[in-house]
View 1 (cartoon, rainbow, N blue to C red):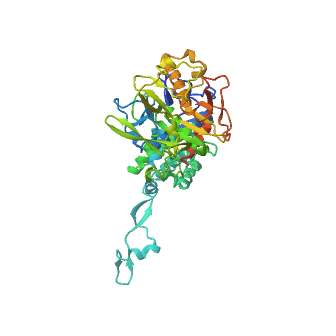
View 2: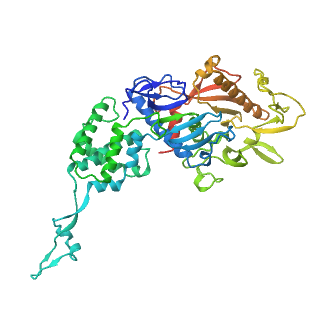
View 3: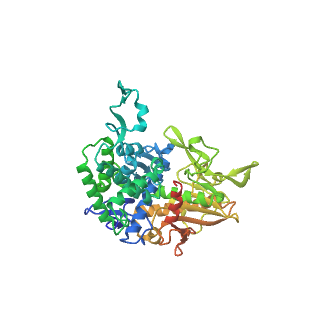
Length: 522
């Protein structure tokens, strides 16, 4: 397992990667942090450990939520690349962002997964007690063996053997159960009991067996994940495993299952060159950030949401428009996405607006529309629409050309909120560091194109809505690390030095957003 005090932190990496992997320049590990973590403390064992286990839970939840739905099956080169796509890969999920960037999620970390997956209450019990024939006689059970008894002439019955619980192995065999349960219990605590159901249902039993191991081998202060006792505790566990294996003479499949799980945890390493789940992290964190933010707003501002480009799963949420297996998903509007000659469904969230047409209330997605000239890249602005006065749209071929054949384009901002004063807020989640906006003149050509394209999209959202509504806020919502107590409910703050054509940049409290996301699993 990792020594969190020895992990090198990589902040604002050139590669779009979040996770842990072996350094290419040495044998040490590197933790590539999310965007916005410039102020994350260096060399802090506890902070790094807490972040690691929260990211572990985050990756696992994202994979669990996305694997069952339809969009995980599509990621072909000939597919229209203007929507988010996801496919299953050997190590986790393969994803593609709206901008066409290829992403890979590796949520399986064998050091931990092996311990969690190995737990089997029946196997634990089978190692603790095996059934064998014994010459010992339990007279309280003798009535069960009368059919086997030999009846002597003097009315005495003789029972030769009984099938009674009896340890088959040496005492050390029980130790491997206790050692395994100790490691499992330490992991359970770090994951805040966010573990598979079969483990969660037996936490008390696991804790009891773990305590047996602690009583025999460790002091009350020692722990695998404590900054002061990590190395000492790990060495004791390795020595205990060696001794147990040396003095255990009978080793069946149950024994080897536990042994290999312990060995993988204590000695396992990451291999960044293999596409097998050992390479832990994600290339392309933006989709997870979007789901995290959507979860936060649906949990805390559900009544204000007019439109959301998401179909997240929420515990306790009942959606009457969906089938049983998807009843907890928020999407209530199905749109068709072209897939070659066929179509597939993608779900959005859209409710009725206060605008009617032909005696029918329009839904918000029907207001998020602009019209295009059928010719190449000409935006036709209706009379109600005005270009932002400070931005030159002509660079993108947009034009006011009149009397042209029109086609509609339906827009999909991440979130539209309506506050108590009936003003609208437009929010788009961006997984970029604050420097992306502060130092836009230093961006690479590719980054600069993204910067300009994001502004165009954000102003177009506002353009489509401003005919009949007033826009109070138009935000880019980016991740940011704040050194605040875990109980803090501060969502974040506006970067006061930035005002990009009326768009403000909101630095969102990463841990607060993440905590709301992870509550879904508890």
